[in-house]
Image (cartoon, rainbow, N blue to C red):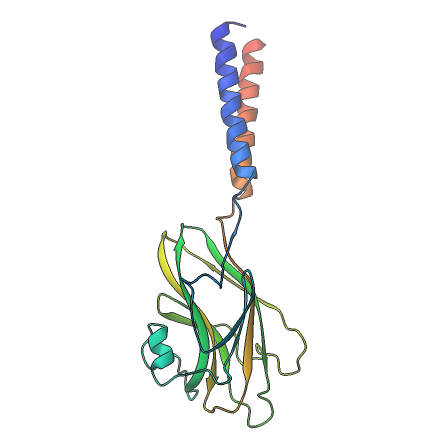
Length: 217
């Protein structure tokens, strides 16, 4: 084999190996540090650890515009149907995300709202002012028995940019019921490197080997 062909084969193989290595080794997730001073908080909260926080709507921030103002929401953005937000607790932070990255956490909500007088308290996530209710008393998303009910939240960012993210829990229609939101393992997950990426790299290497074998034959 000529020196030029050897160098060409080595270079092509090296490219294929680099592509495979890149596809096989995604970067690490970034945990949300709720103790970071840039993470703002209001109401009743306890930072449990890295990526972990408890939020309660007991003796929390009044939702007379104060809570909504903290969240950069309109005054009625936490009211849904006949359920009017009365008080709540929340955290908010800015997130610089690449396209395909994902905000991910597990959550558990517990309440003492039960029976015919139970109010429909709810936890929520707001991204750039768009509120998503992730569970409520009526749907069973908030556990009334005290038994762990672990749920997952995942939001993929389609475009790169700076996002304002808020996570909270709200007491609706009264100030007597108590609901607690426990957030765990909050993190930003890198864009999943799919099987396609690895497949392309492996296929590229196979093609090179086949072409080389044909030339040798």
